[in-house]
Length: 106
Image (cartoon, rainbow, N blue to C red; front, side, top):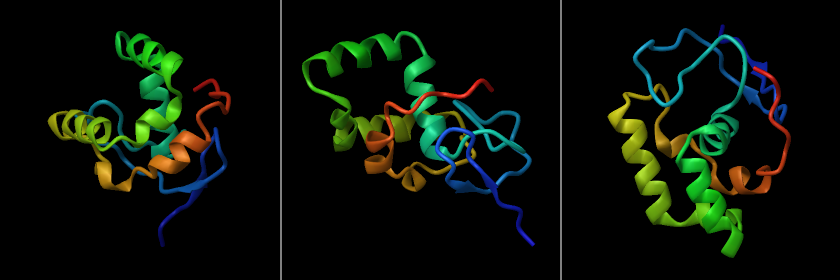
């Protein structure tokens, strides 16, 4: 039976598990964040990406993440890093909707 836990940021149910130690930019874990919150954390804490996004969002807002071009580039990063999660599982409208939720201490 598959275990379900709640994301520490948004409370959404997620599937914990053993992560691939070579998975980048993030991997499955026994606790922590759902995929949507993990990608948000990646965007907000990875330099120079976070500074670039902050500059873009100053002129627009977080809805820029709904751009197919942005999503395609994220997919390439995840694929190149052998990420545990496929980009198709990211719920981009939820990422945008929950952008301003505080990030828990991990």
